[in-house]
Length: 200
Image (cartoon, rainbow, N blue to C red; front, side, top):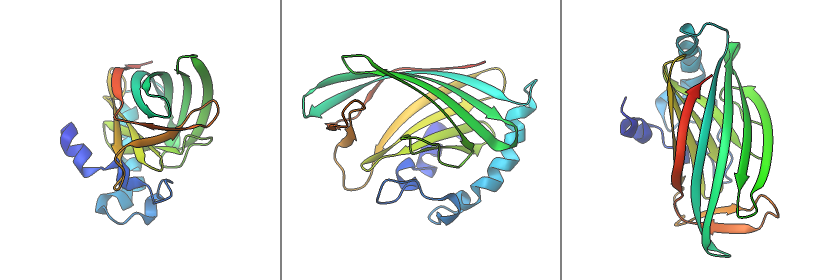
């Protein structure tokens, strides 16, 4: 499936409710295939692992984007993040994330584990989900938008990654909070500076 077709079939903004929380998989009824995502994931996971020599597959995602802040203090804000994503047997996913952002280069480090389709712990409000035999998506729900990381792979040799921010209906700008003091922040469409992937 082409990237444009897949994104029109799976709208990350539709995967969360009005409060910004991701919808439980089996309660989502607006998209017929999505209610069966756990079954589909169980069928496709062996394909992801079949060409791997071990019981798990690991990816390193190197990401960077610029957030054009318009309030409270206009200016571009650079965010750099490195994800180590591990797909283990029986549908487990672990992500280790190191992130640096802002002019003061504030750094953070987190490791989270969950079943595919379950919400990761901490502030992430995110889930890793299987879309097909070669594509995973990490969807993080926010009150004003969703942030999706699309990971495409042949399972053991190569991978690519792309980023997508999508506003929810009724919003004209993205809303968030600073990681340091939780100050409200309003910004326009982020610009991707780097999005690379390697199989470890």
